[in-house]
Image 1 (tube, rainbow over the protein chains, first blue to last red):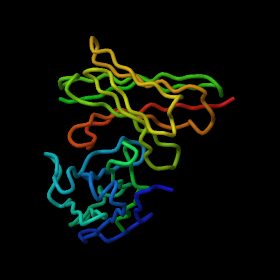
Image 2 (image 1 turned 45 degrees about the vertical axis):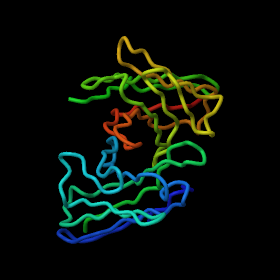
Image 3 (image 1 turned 120 degrees about the vertical axis):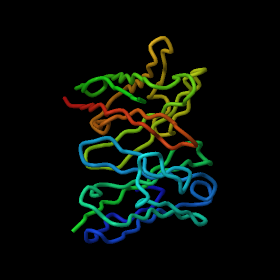
Image 4 (image 1 turned 45 degrees about the horizontal axis):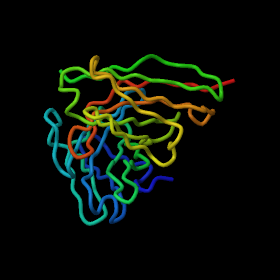
Amino acid sequence: QSVLTQPPSVSAAPGQKVTISCSGTTSNIGNNYVSWYHQIPGTAPKLLIFEDNKRPSGIPDRFSGSKSGTSATLGITGLQTGDEGDYYCGTWESSLNSGLFGGGTKLTVL
Amino acid sequence: QVHLVQSGAEVKRPGASVRVSCKASGFTFTASYMHWIRQAPGQGLEWMGWINTNNSDTGYAQKFHGRVTMTRDTSISTVYMELNSLTSDDTAIYYCARDWTYKAFDPWGQGTLVTVSS
């Protein structure tokens, strides 16, 4: 069981919006940046969001990140079938000086 | 183009050791920390540790302390992850990833499947 809590699955229709939450504590999300990754089965994860809310070049603005206190949220608008896959939040755990990932959320675009 | 290329799949017996390599290109190798993350079949991501490619300092997840060693060879821009005393629970895809900024990992290697089976 991960220290960072994500919903196991979310779903929405093409063109709609979805949000994925990531809940932690003051020693991880509360005091460290959060990043988000998208993983299509059989491939390596890909960075979507870094430093809570910034997008690397090449990531469309349909993807957004936010953080409040000890929780972070990934938002995806204008859903496309290519957005399906698993989404992971990641951060640092200050008390253990170690990396941390959420358990992952499977997105289905109906 | 920033790229990480990992070594090929491995099959090991329980109790054995495995070493996975990760060759970097397209960026200054000694300017970035590198991390190792693994993913068991059907499971989520599990962070294993990091290596400072400039001075070879390392930091490991408590779970792997005493069983994992991360090293680097700056002459060939390659980092290595060695895991010993393997059990079936170590069957997983092992990824290397560059610490691009504040523990955001980009890019990732293509992954190396390690299968532990008798």
